Length: 314
Image 1 (cartoon, rainbow, N blue to C red):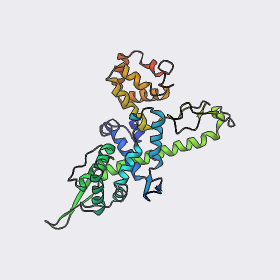
Image 2: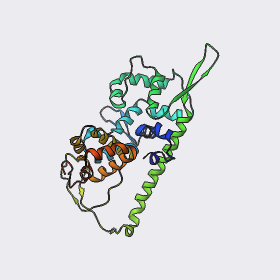
Image 3: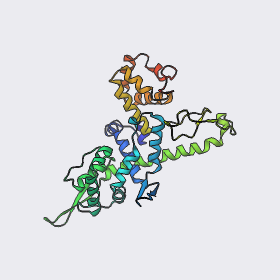
Image 4: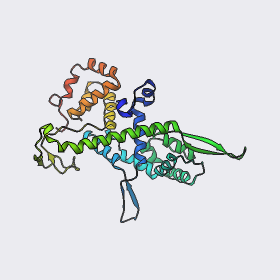
């Protein structure tokens, strides 16, 4: 998992800074906020213009909604992107990524701090940290960039007694993050190329190119309101998004400590393919936990089969 996520050789130091997937999730958040809005729309009643998150963000949300039936398991990446964007972090980071420096009295930072204090409850709920009443601009910026796998550094300028601190992004963390983002872009491009060329080589997979999937009305239009129909033609499911998979692993790990019933309750939310993908990822991340699970629940692998443990609502 670590090698695939970062695209470099796995070392003890990399495992340590990865912190069980936290760093790669942070860098994914950085990649997201650096991406410009996909588009914007204007509310005809208020005249206000609202940005829409980029595709790499909305696609992760869509993947989780398709694979994780319970909303409590969703990451809500679009909400995080929008919160950071509305704070002005996209424009500030775009400048800092170019090597620019900021001071504590920078007008953009002061505006960001004002918004954060005014929307403190939303920041707490969406981004997970508390905004103090006397929030300092540099503290806020440092907290936000640390959530994205980066760090601030500074140098002093001016005469003694009149020195001003100039803040910028630490090059070590920035260069590493850019390397990982480039790897992630390469993986996405390769996946898109495979998707593009696969339909042009149907004989390799013995698929009739003229075969059209048969669609029927959705069985539960309310629960699947984004679906217009259901394809009954069987095709191999695409691999689960990496961030979603890591999230599923953490959900399963949380259930292990609560016993067999909790594990079954979690597995029943997922299709068989996602169950197996999650278990294989758990083997990579925490093989010792999987061994304990095998001992505690001898029939565990049978539960990965939907014939043995059907999906809820299936």
